[in-house]
Length: 526
Image (cartoon, rainbow, N blue to C red; front, side, top):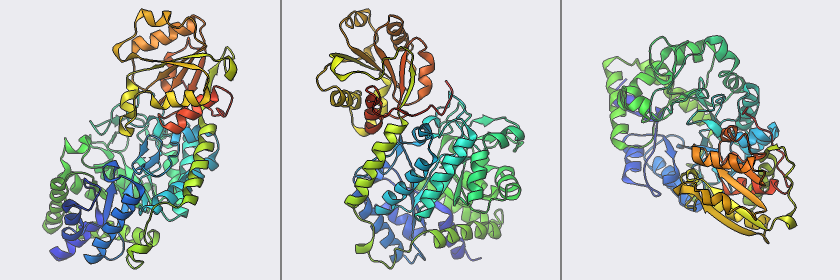
């Protein structure tokens, strides 16, 4: 191979991102100079649906003008729920654990089809979803409600249903994070986790969803930056392990689709072997796509490192060609060719019909997902007319949960309570400064106490809420994200889980208090 031929193939196997809501020098350099054919988008790239459609049309036009054969693959993490990169202008859908709580696998399929329609309407043709991790570790800092639940069969069924919905509509689906990120207590964005389960356990739990997805024909599998010591004897993550990617995933499990890395700029890679060396090692291990989401200097360093490694013979030409051909075949078979359709026929602002369909599915899924976990005193359903005074408590963790949406810490809950109980007097208590004895005295004449609990542990607050429950007052513990927080509230007789702090799920949780919806079942054990 000539160096020019090598560079063309390297452009095929890089997924790269850039800052900005318009085509930047960074983006142009990737596409024109380095022939990068795969772009990843984040919230930093999105202002509105119309803006995003225009950005993606412009990126495709640049690729065409630069001589690319076939369209760019443009991907994003549209897991729904708490991970939605494409948010403004598109009605949000509940995330995986909320869908798992509905107990209806058809809902996962419908979520996949509607997610595909939404993404295609703004020019995105690949979804880095669904998460296929089985979340059986309550202390997992990175997966949690992004998982369908703790039951491997449920995760397998629901995950494959979403994949089917995405792929039937022509959007590339990606199951992640192989071989499984659900039983870790370390965030691989920050460090290098290790899972020591034996092969038998992996087959029975972690691998089940991936095996079903691969049997169905999932387009792409994303690797985990995690050490799996029962497969790889060295202390290296699956992303860089030939034993995991080639010997196990390819040879033993017979997976024939595309293998992509998770972002190589995560600390598990960047703070160990480094991004450029990590890209070379991942390619040698058997990865076909190398994801470098952020910095141009790291993207260019990785490209040069791969080119040099092929020229020097460290990376066989056949390995590079094999990876590039897998990506080319995926592009050819899955992605519609927008190059010859003209920008005027490309992506546009989502039509009213799609928005109406999205809103209707959102409302139905949320009602089916909201879960009355405990109702031991029969407080629920409440009578609207009997609720005169409501006291709302919100812990400080909610501020961080809502910051990306530019909402105040209690805005969603306040709005939902006002809509559901329009005649009640509402008193809002923000406990960021701590719990004081006077708070309990203020509750003497209340009709309802709603205690919003984030996933962040606040021992004083949890103790306070338990005390209210023991005193026999009408208190509801509302788990605003992870339902695992409810296991620390055993003295609270009424508990509701909504799985994500989003406007639509908060409203569904409050509706459940008056008997509207709230039919979900916990997909995890407390």
